[in-house]
Length: 227
Image 1 (cartoon, rainbow, N blue to C red):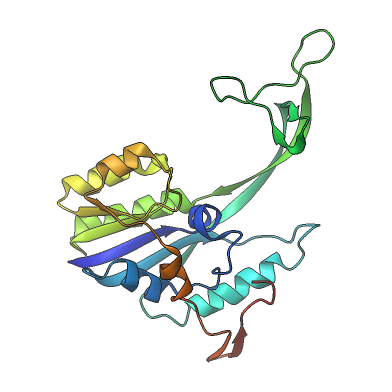
Image 2 (cartoon, rainbow, N blue to C red):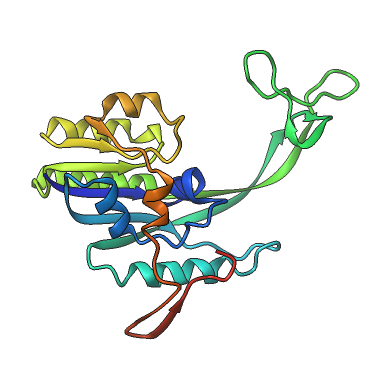
């Protein structure tokens, strides 16, 4: 089937790539390997430009190198959303005394709120940064392609259940829906809606890497040293 792939970049990164040695991923090779029975015609990659963080000043440079690498792939289109930052007051949670990096959960699995001496929930001001636009952009391109009949099959790379409605609408237009969930424990609703599912395995990632160094029209592209 003629297939378009729609990748939620941050969902894919945090669900499957973070903490691995496979971030330098050639999306064409990856999609061709994980979908061997499909003819992948177009790959849409939805992301947002990151800012330097105090603990990670090189984050934008690494992203820029990866975006340059993706630009060498003729079937890949990159579309940008943006980040919004705001200060908001939020309740704090009780940390695990055996591991301060974790928080306590009640028997139902919900985080345990931190209480003061009077039993009131403790709150504090936090800086909240949210990525905006990727899910909306993904939904818009999916529906555009469905209404235009641009492909026979649409494969979604995301665990975001906010995409349920646009996927349902695309399905009513006759599209076969595939799902590549970045996390094994992804949205049950998304899995139930898809006609088929393909789980990304380590060998799909390890054999789909860009060369450490290669060239584009502007010069040399170098894999980030800590990737």
